[in-house]
Image (cartoon, rainbow, N blue to C red):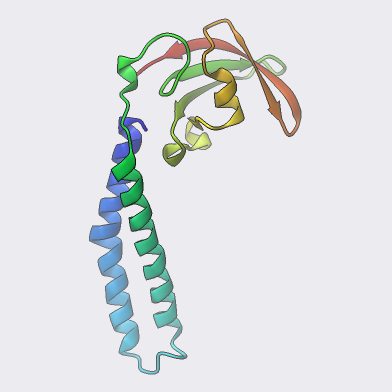
Length: 151
């Protein structure tokens, strides 16, 4: 995972532990004060939220404990993990820029491409000027690689 991805997950973990967890505990305590717990919607909602928060905390702790942080700025050459790649769709001439990142930090809306995605897999090992062929639900797509950066 990239340093930025590790930092974002670590920030989320800290927020869950220092903000969300105490808020849920307060919500459960307030809901308990309303009496009968069997028909107390606030109590059940707070318990459900607590379950989600605790599950996410465990998930993030496991991810972060096993994470191998890679600094893309120390890499160079053909496309590999951490590369920021600008490609052009050979059919529509639309340019897009992606950074190839780990699963946990992927967010296609922000240009962070999961290394396990079909596009990322087709880009790995390629150089500027090469064409990457990708099989999509809409058919075959071809992308020409315009630039590769490691930042």
